[in-house]
Picture 1 (tube, rainbow, N blue to C red):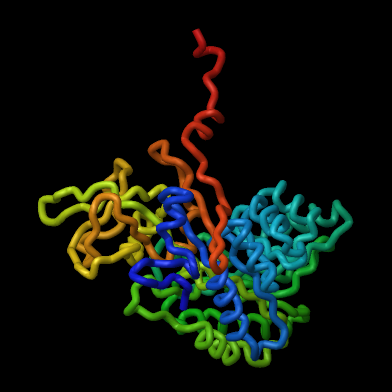
Picture 2: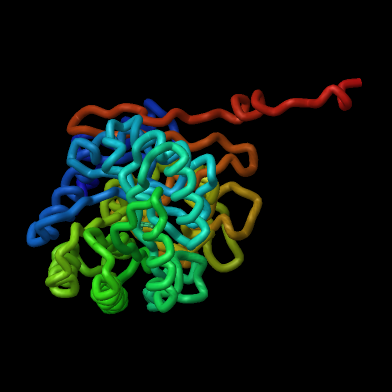
Length: 420
Ligand SMILES: *Cc1c(COP(=O)(O)O)cnc(C)c1O
């Protein structure tokens, strides 16, 4: 459930008509609903109420906007981060350092050191050498880094290839059959406090079975490690729950997921860590856009909108579906292609889509754009960096500025050897 609904024929975010935001801020613009973010944070936490010891770390990469993080920090969420920049964002949002989980397959030495200085609460180690380096850096600082070893359970999440992370050919984690040896060697290092395991098998997952299979493999490994004398008190179960981009394709609910987790982790006697991203923010955002032209096409018209693949990359990158709706629909329908202005045929949001009739100048939204939307934006084609707005009841505020092409141009320099 979200808070983007039609009232008097006009799409609103909570109590604010989207036309008002378009007038004030221009388009394209991302719009987030605070009430929806809070609701999703609560629903996910409620789904895990049967789990006694737990920590929920929002996967910041899904939506790193500072105001969004602030809302989730107030809900008691920590952060799952994948770069030094994300550590800084989590701290800036007021998330305590010990609530931050540092994931990511390519943490640099400098990032590890800075995160140790900041007091980050957990490092998810992706390969043996990383664990050794982390241990060395921590020891040299007189610290012990709290860490877990990420294993690759070799299960197929059944999702898009570009967001599948738990098959053995993916770059993430250590092969699960090598984990006992790596765990034993790393746990002997004085700079490391190796406390358990982590896994994350993919994103936009619609079938709980592969996740459960992964969890069960990790459960067996916990038993095996304990039998070898290791103390295990944490397991990080990752994220990956899907959201309904299409109305008639419904993913498992957080409650379904919570029930599965209780079943699969029964008797583990650890603190469970969760790293939800998309499921918290996906439906809490829309991308508001204006139709520039309705261009006649060979087969059907192209609706050319002022948002493009540089603003919302998911369709071009993952063949993703986003519902497209007029802000003030007339009730009439048309079949059309929807595309942006960027000079790439891949800058197409939908082909042969049944949509509200729109004409030049009309406003429309791409729904379910709160996750992996603005955060993936670029300035390709010398377009502005897309701004973000948050709505709270009848109030709204710009929470990320539109960064204009001239600002980006001002950061470029013509070297002396070209100035003649
Ligand atoms: C991306 C990612 C997540 C979040 O995935 P969602 O599908 O957005 O829930 C969680 N953990 C790790 C390690 C990730 O890389």
